[in-house]
Image (cartoon, rainbow, N blue to C red):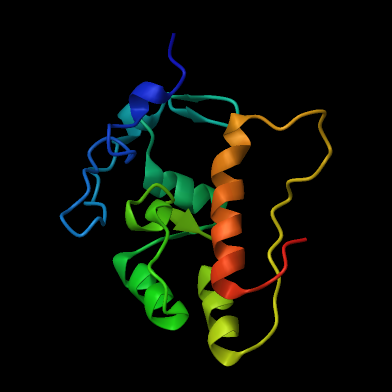
Amino acid sequence: MDDGINQMNISGNPPGQEPQQDGHQQPQEPATAEQAGDATVTPWEVKGLVDYDKLVRDFGSQKITPELVARFEKITGQRAHPFLRRGIFFSHRDLGVVLDMYEQGKPFYLYTGRGPSSEALHLGHLIPLQFTCYLQKVFKVPCV
């Protein structure tokens, strides 16, 4: 059964991205078009060799770079969450905007989109909820 678990190595990084000594991920060899041609990435399924650069392009996000992690730590005065340091989260939308607002003392809030729209939460919800809790504590902002 291919449930996507074999696509992650023991460090939690995508294939070819072993963490460096400082905890930041190493660049991944991009999948060729032929290798990534059969890749499927949905909320329910991951199969094939995933082209992470293509995911970033297709979803309109930006890569989380070591420089962005360092900026996060400098501005917040807090060590970045392990999900950021280890490259488990590899892209973002608007983290730079959030850091700008925090640095300027402008108010903002967190919004997860996780609500009581289904009958139950499951283990897959744990990672975004843990990270949101961390951000809420670091930024001292409400989550709606």
